[in-house]
Length: 435
Ligand code: AMP
Ligand code: GLY
Image (cartoon, rainbow, N blue to C red; front, side, top):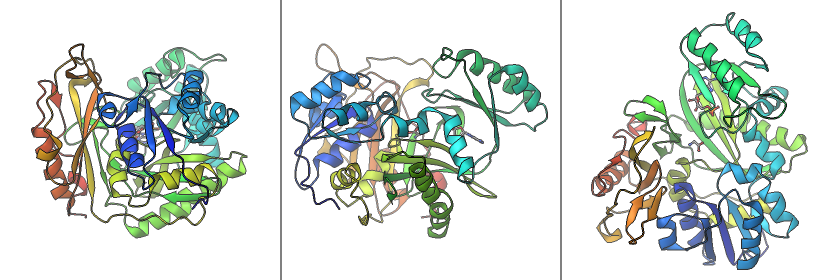
């Protein structure tokens, strides 16, 4: 662990449930640092001071950190990382947790990541890269369906099409090439990646990385589809549980050996001094674990389920990682499982209403070891708590078993008054019985 004194004032960047979980964990650090958040949301603002600087305003965030005397910045979302927020903070002499723009490219470009995975022989889906639709379609005609078409750049979860039929695959290739990841073609033209379709259960492995050192956080499983039984369209994530009980100690050992260690080593060998979270999306295929993607930040909603299980001081871990002193840091984990049920606005991930009033039970009325984290919430002109996003709240509970944790979380979800609330009923169900 770092021998450097811990920071006195920490700025968390972002406004989701992930950032609310980070704010709570950092504020609970034994040194009781001052914690600020930009821009935050209505729930984060009940815990700590929020400042209305958007998460993609790099100069504004550097100025805010300087003006507030923040001596550490923890960056939640991917956009400021790829815009170079950590580089800009470093130039201003402010320490930050999160990769610089060179490391953030591992999330911002799926083609770049695929090249690194292949170069370092890390198991992943077979893939080919195309810059024009005709060659992509000709290649796909030689391959079986389902097949996966991916835009190269950041696409807020909309850049991946798992096509079950040929017409869908060809339309996806044309659309993603014509539009690019951000909905408009990038300079130099869009590129796509076409991948073999992997099957199996997914798991999220979050790794705190500092150069060649790393600490693997407790495993988690996201629930990406909107409907019970993993049906309907993909979302940002409708809930998570930790551990992902499907990942036995033996399987985790294999994941560390074949994926985590070579990834961390490979990234360092590329000359990237990565100090932040490497979030590895993994498919547990019949041929073994394979990488689906890298993200270069904490997962949302995985973080909400993982952090309540981390007994070690999170601030100390992130501060050590940011300073290159992570080596040998032990991680103390609570054995009890945790769950996060996302309460969304009905209609999400399509169009949904905003401004619906939310009535929350008082903290004292919640089941034991249960908390409500905020994501898309705001205050209206009258100061009432209202919905302001697709994913509105994250209800997090810890329990002696995953079933007990889920019962606590769902009791709290049921007691939330909000006409347009919607949540899945089966978060964690697949892992129950395995724990
Ligand atoms: P990604 O952003 O690359 O993780 O893709 C988002 C989601 O698409 C993943 O969580 C998977 O559910 C699915 N996906 C991505 N790549 C593949 C693949 N090669 N085979 C099957 N499903 C995939
Ligand atoms: N839970 C998936 C993500 O954070 O991208």
